[in-house]
Image 1 (spheres, rainbow, N blue to C red):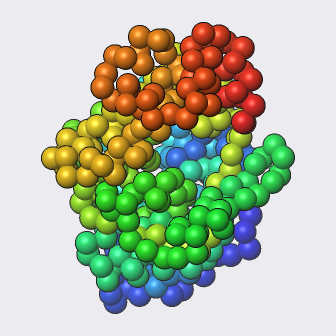
Image 2 (image 1 turned 30 degrees about the horizontal axis):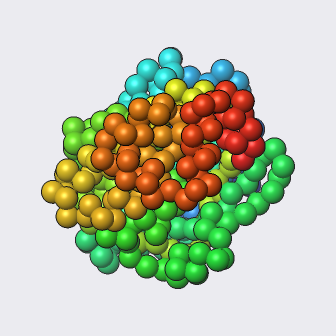
Amino acid sequence: MIDIKEETVMENWDYSKYIEPLVAIVCLTYNHELYIRDAIESFLSQKTTFPFEIYIHDDCSTDGTVSIVQEYAEAFPGIIKPIYESENRWKEDYGASYLFHKEITKRKYQAECEGDDYWTDPHKLQRQIDYMEEHEDCSLTVTNGKRLNVLSGSISPVFEENEIEISKRNGKYDLNNFYLLKYPPTASHVYRREFLEGVEKAMSPCRASDFRNRLFLMTKGYVYYFSEETCIYRIDVKGSATSSWKNFDIPQQKDINEEYVRMLCEIDELTKRQYTDSIWKVKKEYISKKLGCGSFSDIFKTTENKKVFHEMSIYFKIRTILKIIMPNWLYVFIYLRDR
């Protein structure tokens, strides 16, 4: 366990300014026995002038995760608030964990980091909260980070250096240019809790709730991006959601891409089509992936499908048609090759 005491974590907290925790760190974990210590200790290593609390929500792990969480909860009782499930809620309902946290973590800000990821910058939380306290129209802050492949050990930036407009420059993003921001690591998310109120009524349940929440938050304010690499996002973790998606069969792949398209359509409707052009730049990517998991008739089923297919390069048209004709072996060759 980390060589630090609870009073050391709290030593710079300004109780004259904050009578209760300003931030709730939410960590959803499931069978993360190999990784959860890194996550918890990275939270406890944060240097802040404001109090925070840590909610570690174990989703009915079957390995040794629970005993590790209990160990830290006993050592840091004033900071760590464990939540233990008797059944796996994520499998039952994609939105269950968010709805549950909404009722429990009633703090001004919420920070997210799943149990197989962790933070690498002890000033991450202070930097993001300082900005949001000074800019009330900012609904979400995110940062750069690194991907760590647990199988190969390779490490790479989430935003590569050739993505100049992203990787090295702080900046604002909203629904006009969110397609440039692409997919910031969920472990970097810090948002205003009140701005996420109503998302479960406005948008459909989905597996990619981080993507959905990010879109919804952009209807309430802008996203501020910090170029500092503040977190590690582990990939190819056994049992993780994104790892399991890589093993989906073609109908399941079609379903997940349809979910993304539906989310983007819902945001377009929520914003009364003010951002249709920028939303289309992202939506067409998922329509393209969806077409490769369907049939010939899907290509001509809607105007948007036809438009996407028409705009494809010859290479991608051939690739899409081949996936339709011979989906099983080509899926293995093309899709799983990129794991």
